[in-house]
Image (cartoon, rainbow, N blue to C red; front, side):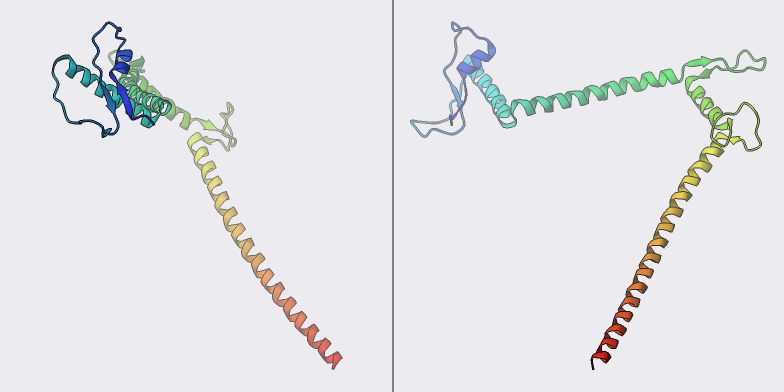
Length: 209
C-alpha cells in the first residue's frame, strides 16, 4: 500500500494548473519514511501556500477514502435535503398562516355591512361543525326524508365506535371464558379416563389371580 496520500502534482491537476506554472515538489505521506533527515520546516511565500493547499487536498482525500465516495455523497444528499426541507417548512408555515387567516366569504351580517368576513380558518371550523351536526340514518347517511331513528352524525359516530369497542371486549371475554371451559372439560375428561383405566387394570388383575 502506498504511503503517499497526495503530492503537489495531484494538487496541480485538481486546480487545473498548466505545466508551465511554478509547482513545488512536495508530498503528504501517512507515516514517516525513516530515511534521511526528517524534521519540521517553516515555509514562507508561495511554498507555504502550496503546503496549505496540499494539506487541504490531502485531508479531503483521507475523508473520501474513509467514508467512500458513494456513502459520502449519500450523507451530503441527506443533509442537504434536511436543510432544504427545514427552510421550506419555515417558509410555508408563514404562507399557510396567511392563507388560513385570509377573508373567504362574507359573514351573514343581519343588516350589519361592517361585520368581519369569514376566514379560511373559521370556515374549516364551521364546515366541521356542520358535518358533525347533520342528521343521518342508522347507516350514517344523510336522509332527505325525516325518520324516527335519525340522529346527528357525531352521535352516530360515537355510538358506532363504542359498539365496536364493546364488541371487541365482549369477544375477548367470551374467548377467554371458552378457553377456561375447554381446559376444565379436558381436565375432567383426563381424570375420568385415568379412573376408568385404573378400574380396568384392577379388574384384569382380579381375573388373572
